[in-house]
Structures are given as C-alpha cells and as structure tokens.
Amino acid sequence: MTKKVQPLRRNRDFLLLWQGTVVSELGSNATTVAYPLLVLYLTGSPASAGFTGFVALLPQLLFQLPAGAVVDRWNRRRVMIWCDVLRCLAIGSLALALAADRLVLAHVLAVGFVEGTLTVCFRIAESAAVTTLVDPSQYALALSRNEARTRGAVVFGQPLGGLLFGLGRAIPFLFDAVSYAVSLTTLLMIRKDFRAEPADRPGRLITELFAGISWLWRQPFLRVTTLLVAGSNLLFQALFLAVIVIARANGGSSGAVGVMFGVAAVGGVLGSLAAPALERRLSMKSVVIGANWAWALVVPVLLAVHDPYLIGAVYALMCFVGPVWNVAVVAYQLGVTPDRIMGRVQGAAHMIAFGAIPLGSLAGGLLLRWIGAGATVAVLSCWMLFLAVAASVSPAIRKAPSLAELHAPEPVVVAD
Image (cartoon, rainbow, N blue to C red):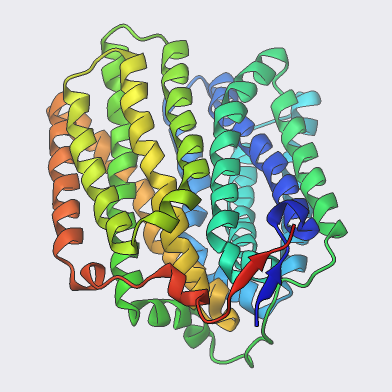
C-alpha cells in the first residue's frame, strides 16, 4: 500500500515552528555580536568580554543531560513555550536596565547564563519535535531546511547586531526579546503534540540522566560519528581564532573579518540547500569519510592564503560540507532513536559534540600564544588528517547503515 505524505511546504505545524525559530535565531545572532560590544562598553576589558562568552557557553557543557531528561519527562511543546517566555523576559531585562542606565556586569553574566541554559532545553526539544511533525521519509529534507535557517540567521543576524548596537545599545537586546515573543506566538499556534510515544515511568535520577549516553554508546555508528563531530568541533573553534589572527596580521580590518565569516556562512547555506540531493545520491559511509577528507584537504590551504576574502572562500568550502554531514547523520539518529529517550540521546550527543567547543577555544588560544598562527594551522591540519584516517579505518563507518532503510518497507508518495 502506498502512503501519501504531505509536502513540507504544506505542513502547517512544521512551517510555524520553522518560521518562529528562524526569527528567534536571527535575534540571538544579533545579540551574539552585541554581548561583547556591550561588555566592552561597560568595562573596557577584553578579558571580561571573553569571560562573558565563556559563561554563556557553559550551559552547553553542564546542562545537556539534564535538559534531555526534562524534554523526555515533560510536554515538549510546553517546555519550548516556557523557554521562550523566560528568554524573552531575561533579554528584555537587559534592554530595560540599559534604558534606565542601571546595567552592571553581573546582570549581563546572569542573563547570558540563563539564556544559554534555556536555549539548550529549547534546541533539544525542537530536534525531538521533528520526528512528530514530519514523516520519516522527510527527515533529511526537514533537517536541511533547519540547517539553512540556522546558517542564514548567522549571515544576516550578526551584521544586524552590529548595526543595531550602533543605533542604540539597548536596541539589539530589545530586538532579541521581540524575536522570542514571535517564536512563542508560533508555538502557541501549533496544534500537534510533540511526542510520538508515552513517556517512561520516572526512575532513579542518575539512571534517567545517563540513559541517553548508555543507549548512544551501544550504537557503533552513532558512537563513532559523535566522537568525530567532537573532534572536528574542537578543530573549527581553534581554527576560528587562528584565521582571525592571520587576517588581522595581514592588514584585514574588523569589517573585512566580518565579511570573511559572512562569506563562509553563505557556503553553509548553500550546503544546507544541497544536502537533501547529496544525501540521496551518497551512501552514509561516503558522507562521513568524504566530509572528513574534504576538511583534511582544505584546512592546510589556509597556510597558503592570507587575504581575508580568500580565507573566507576557503572557509566557505569547509562550511559547505558541514550541513551535508549533519543532515545525513542526524536524520539517521532521529530515525533509529526511540521517542521515549529522544531528548536524552540528543542531550548526550550534544554534550559530547558541543562540549568540545570551549576546549577548542582554550586549545586555540594556547597554541596561538605558544607557537603562532601559522604553526597552529599546521597542528590543526595534522589533527584533521588524524580524524580523516580514523573515519576511514573505523569498522563502524566502513559498515555504515543506510538512511533509506529506515523507511524503505512502505512506498511513499508525496501529495501535491
């Protein structure tokens, strides 16, 4: 029997979630730029600006597992609604304090930490919601749309943040608060539940928290790919610092550096749009091994280019590959993970993958201080080569599963 599937362009609930989230991500990217500018305005200290970024990122490491347990225990849509309400209030308090000229650094740190914690919960719940809003045959397409949304928000949101801050220090934070209100409105309009299966009975807290890690670790392919993502995230965070130093050392202005990363983000958007077609044509093994070798070959090119715009072009090639990996691997993960532990598995995967980002920032800073930018890129090139070889020889990757097998038994026709 052939099953008719509604196309994503007519999937009201998915579109509402996508539209609300793209607005909130645009606001979040605007404040990503505004936060350090604000702290520099308040304190004049780059160290304080760096510490503020660390505090805002800390929940990515601390709260992925608890957030996953919350998402699995509570109503996922309600979790996302409360996250938007509290993020709106937190960011709005910054705008009010700035307007009243009463803002202090402790307030900024508290808001950054609270917003970061709530964002961890929201993202895990949103990722789990994909499995209930779209048909399994559309996971890759839906994820590619989400990838394009996220990367497009970077392209437009970060320059917008600088522009709004120039118009008034409170304006980017007010804009971000309004963006969360828009996301909240779209969530309230969604009719469908975000859970496909009833939740398990509550068990021991420690067992609940580590259920996701335990399940993930027993899946050879997902275990290896999660570790590979952590390794590449560490590399790219360190490389981010290195290319800024290289660009500035060769006369690149702050504006040129911004354009450099804007060009790179465009590569990510293009990769997101191409991902569904590439996923259909390439095996999972080809995606994983090919992505790692593509990065291994491209990273050393940064040793030969110094112009910010050329660096941006090289970075765009690396960013193009990322969404293809994300769409294929995450679609498979969503397809095989039981809904009752979806949040905890997402939390476990995010903790390992995103937990490497602050380590990459630390490693990049130390390498730049000890051996300089060029040698740092050389070391990172060797690290990426190691990851590519590890992916190539891994039995779990060489015997990679097929995403098509997840929904092959029943023919699918997408309705007009």
